[in-house]
Image 1: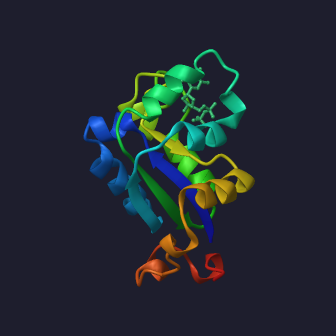
Image 2: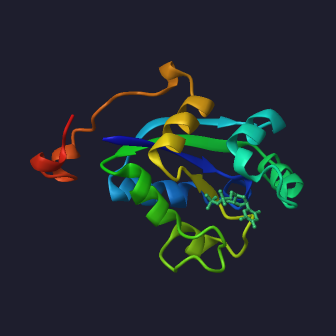
Length: 155
Ligand code: TYD
């Protein structure tokens, strides 16, 4: 099983979309391994978006991500990083396919509802950035044999 980090951005919080999006992840069979509400600050955002600090839109991105509290979530599942990225859709909500979270709820490049880790290295670093070890729960829901076949469950 793999862990990935999702951030429900201020655009999801302010627009009341948290329940709807969380339902999608649960319907898919992803396990909530950690979840909390927090206010992001410039320090953590400069780390999280270090690949974008030189972009002209970075000040606006900072402001957008600090516009309200966010909900950070660690989701777990087979190939969870790729599964969640596919469910998230393209960065620009106007280009994201219908059926994806951004495709269905976003019309913006910046106000694009959620963040989702893009690769195993990022997922590991991002879960550690936003959660203390004791905030991540290693639990297996009883329905797991009905989400995956025995061959697909390694743990
Ligand atoms: P990026 O890591 O490129 O995309 P993704 O979130 O799909 O992994 O960009 C991070 C965030 O930066 C993106 O979700 C929204 C913001 N952003 C802009 O506001 N304008 C832009 O042109 C880009 C590329 C990103």
